[in-house]
Image (tube, rainbow over all chains, first blue to last red; front, side, top):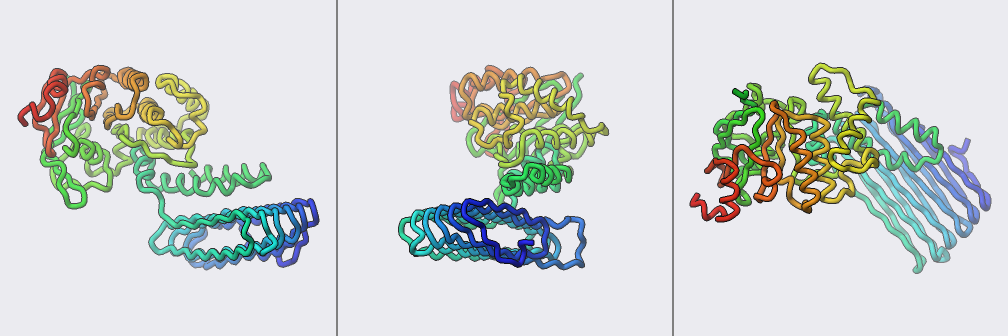
Length: 222
Length: 250
C-alpha cells in the first residue's frame, strides 16, 4: 500500500486517497508536472469507545511538487474524545512554479483529547506563480482539551500567493441557545454544530458513495 | 372566562450584576395579545431573555408560571417544548445546519415531549411547504443553512415560519418589526395574525406603533426602568407615538 512508501505521481496523473481511521499515516509523495493529488486523512474513532483505550494517532504527509503546474489538496479531520491524541504534520514543498496547494485541517477535541498540527509550507525560489493556502480550524469542546498549532511558512519566491490562517474556538453559545429555544436539547444542539463543522471537510471527498455514507452517518447519530 | 396562560410575579433579573428588571408583574390569558413598549434600556429584551431561560441573565427574585408550571425551573429547551417561542430580535446564523435538519429536530423534540411519535418524512415536508407559503418563503429554504446569508426581512420571516411550524402557546416577538420594509412587515404580521387562536397568546415587544396597526394588541404596557409603569388598551400606543415617553410623565 502507499502508506510508509514514497509514491511518484507521474506527469498528468491524478492520485486520490481517503485514509479513514488509520492509526498512523506516513505518506511521501513526489509530484511530477501537471499531476494532481488529493488526500483526506479522517480520524473519527467511535464516540462510544470508553476511557481506557488511550489512542495516539500520528499523521505525516510529505508532498513535493517537482514539476510545474501541479495541484495538491490536503484535507484532515480529527474528532477525538477521552484521552485520544493526534499529531498531524503536513510538509508541502513547491520546488517549481505554477503549482497550487490547498490545505484544510480541522480538529475537534472533546474531554481530555489533544491535537497538534504542524504545517510546514515551503515555496522555493524557482517556484514563481505558486498559489498556496493553508487553513487550520479547531473546536475545543471541553476545558481540558488542548490544541497546538504550528504553521511554518518558508517563502523564497516573490511572485506568489500564499495565505494561512489558524483559529481555535468553542461552540457558538448564541447558536446553542437559539437551538435550545426551539426545543432542541443542548447535547443534540452541540452535535448539530459539530457535524456542521465537519461537513465542509467531508463535502470535499470526490467519491460520492463514501462521502454520502460519512455524512449520513453523522446525521444518523441524531 | 379565558384561562391564565402566563403569570409573572414581581420578577427581578440582572445581567453581570446589574439589575435590569425591577419587579415586573404581568398576567396573560389565553387568546390575548400584549404589546410591551418602552424606551431603550428599559428591559424589554431582558424580559424575553429571562422568560426563555437565556443563561446570560440571572433571575434574582420573583416567580413565573406557564399554565401553572414553574417556568423558571425549566431548562430553555423544556420551556420551548412546553410552548414558549421567542422570535429573536437578532436571529442567529448557524452555518452548516440545514433548515430541514434544524426544523425536524425542533419539531420532533416537541412531539416527544407531548408523547407523540416523530413526524414522518412525508408529513414533515408537506408541513414545511404549507408553512413556507404562509410566509411567502422560497422553496429552496429547506437546504439552506439556518439564517445564513438571509436578508434582514428573510430572517424575520424565518422566525415566524418556525413559529408556524411549532405552534407555540406563548409567542414573544422581540422587535420583529425592526429592519423590515413595509411589505415584509405586512407578511410577517399577517403570518402572526393567522396563527392566532383562542388558546394561544403573544407578547409583542416593539418601539413603534407601526407594527401595532397590523398586530392589534388587547393590552399595551409601558416598561420603563425595569417595571411596567402604565397599562392601557391600543390607544396607549397611539398616545405614546404622539407624546413620546417623556410626555407620559412617567
